[in-house]
Length: 273
Image (cartoon, rainbow, N blue to C red; front, top):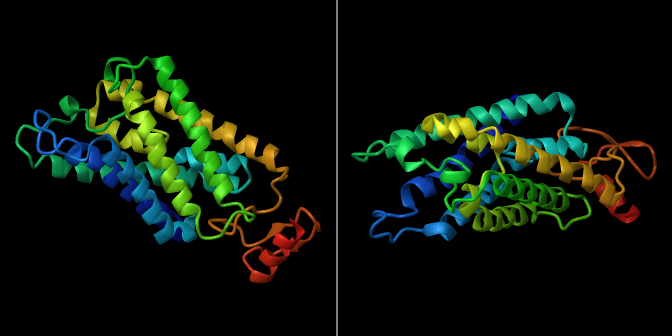
């Protein structure tokens, strides 16, 4: 467990540092009046690249969740034991806050920087939405985008999916999600990421933070339950060799206890499919 939580800390830290860092430091560099920075596409790509790199680096240790909503979706899809859910979430929030602290320290090195005035890549709706979108629009976007994000994760890490490509699919999905969601809410789909930034902005960001816990968790719950119905899995078989925090799982087909991390077991599972 200590190794898995360390992996989750590192992955979440990197995601927030690179993703939110790109928005705070590079999106409109050198300045808003004469912006030649990476812009919306660059920030979206940064989030996706952060997930891809850490999913390959430490995803095999912890499952590469880096997100409380993902952990909830995997819990409901019976990919994560219930006893592991709270430690994962706490670790993710702590890591996101630590990354936000590092980013705040770096950004404060520029004269005149203010987290509250700049927004510090915090998520918001209404007057704090980048595009002025309402609370209802923000909630709907976050629910739907998170649901599809978790669906991509569940599908790409299924034992029947092509092996080794899951991080790419997940990273590309996160890029697409940010391309759509940044104008609406600055894109959360990750309560930990939202919490870390809001703590340093304070005020309105903390007041609106509830929305960026509720909507992603609802979307993740829908995806986690829907995927089980879509595939017909009862949840007794670990559906992925990547990130399964169990050493043994029950076979749906043979009703026998097998080690799904063993190559012969994986080959047999594919044969049954």
